[in-house]
Each structure stands twice: as C-alpha cells, then as structure tokens.
Image (cartoon, rainbow, N blue to C red; front, side):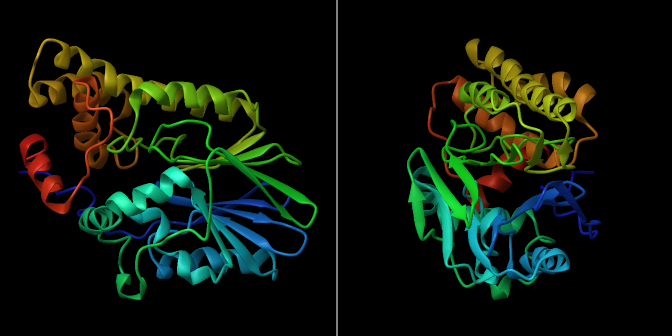
Length: 316
C-alpha cells in the first residue's frame, strides 16, 4: 500500500510543551510540529515563528498570557515557509521582521509554497480560512540587526544558508540563548527541499561558535545545557550529510533520482527512521540533494503538482 502523501496521514493533535529556557525566554514545542519562541522584554514581547494559521498562533498567545500580560510588539520569522509564517496576523504586532533573502522567497514562491504546504500539512492548516494572505515583513535586514525590548538586547543575524536562502537566528546575549529556526532540529527530520547542503555545515559551525546555553530548535524538544545543544547540532549535521553524500555519489556517476533515493534510504533509515516527519521529508530532501549534486545551485520551486509527481515517483 502506498504511503499517505507527506503528512496527510498525520491528523492527531500534538501535546504542547512550554519550557522556560532562560529568564523570560520560552520555547513552544509540540511533538515535532513547528516550534515558536517567546522573548519577554521590559515592556513588550517578541514572538519567533508565527505558526501556520491564526488558529495555531492563538495557542502560542494562550501560553504567552500564562506568563505575561505585556503586549506583543514584534514577530521575527527565521525564514519563509508557509507553515511558519501565515499565522502572523493573529499577534497584532507592529513589527514583522525577516531577512531580505527570506522576503525575496515570499516574492518568488510565496503562493506556490502556500499551495504546496497546504496540501502537505492538512492538520496544521485547519482553520486556514482566517489567513488574510501572504505574510510580508514590515522590516528586513541583509546581514544583521538589533532590537531592544527596553534594556533587553536581541540580535538577529543571517549566519549563512542552510534550510533556506534566508535563514536567520535570534540570539539573546543576556542569557546566551538562541532561537535557530529549522537550521537545527532535535529528533526531527530536517526539511531540505529548499536547502543548501554545501552551506549547511558551515552555518552550523557559526551557531556552534556562539557556545550558547540553550537553543529553541525548529522542531523537537527545547535544548537546555551545552551538552544537549552540542548533540543536537551534531545530529543535525549528520542528518544533512547522510542525505547529501549518497545522493551526490549517485549523481556523480549519472545515476537516476530513484537510485539516489535508494542510496539515501540505505544510509538514513537505520539512523533516522523514528524521527518526526522523516517519511514526509525524505523525498523532498533526496530530490534537492540530487539537484544540488548535479549543479542546480538555486532550489527549484515546489508546487502542489510537482510535489505529487515527485512523491509518486519515489514514495508511491
């Protein structure tokens, strides 16, 4: 029997966890679903990652209101994927921040990505009727910017390409805590369909150099303590490398995409088969790894139609 497409077979609600990972810093996690972060400043609150819909954003707001009544002034989006950003309107924030490269992705492939992810994640897009449209930032930056919530300094930086062209990390120096978006995952598959395999390791090195006390990753549990942070960075590196290397070997001998698929499965299945969204991500990851190894530097745009064609060719 063919596997259900992407996450169409995953319709069970996930248990939400809300962990304090530094003073006034919180990680909203949900068993491998997309995470959000909360940064409480002197007078207001910053949200990291908006969620897929206003319905899901309301769950983040509910948790915020359990710990503070300060208004939400900023939403920072670490990158552009519909499942991360389309809930932004719910927060009523004056400032929505993303990198220039992330905004360029909204312009280039915003609607295509929305249509694609709507098809991939039906549970996350329940209540999609309340999405007012594509999420565009009010503020962008090219390399780095700093926001002050009163005296609390928050550094937002594009440390390199990895999960997408526009990835940003958010670092709170007073606690030495970082929100990494999908550059770092914990016991969850990395989605590499819009990724840059050749750059990802260097970007992880840049994060590692901060030597942070805690990380809120893109998916999976909050990472508290330098030991857990280090393990997550290295397991993410292993996942990315274990996906790219076999696909690159196949591409180098002019093998087919299906041969690359078989080679990546042989390397990744024993190590990562129990990771959240593993089966969902794998076909998109192999397709991108195979493309990059063949010299296609800029990730091709995924559409709802291309998704299904690729899935049937590999997972069908």
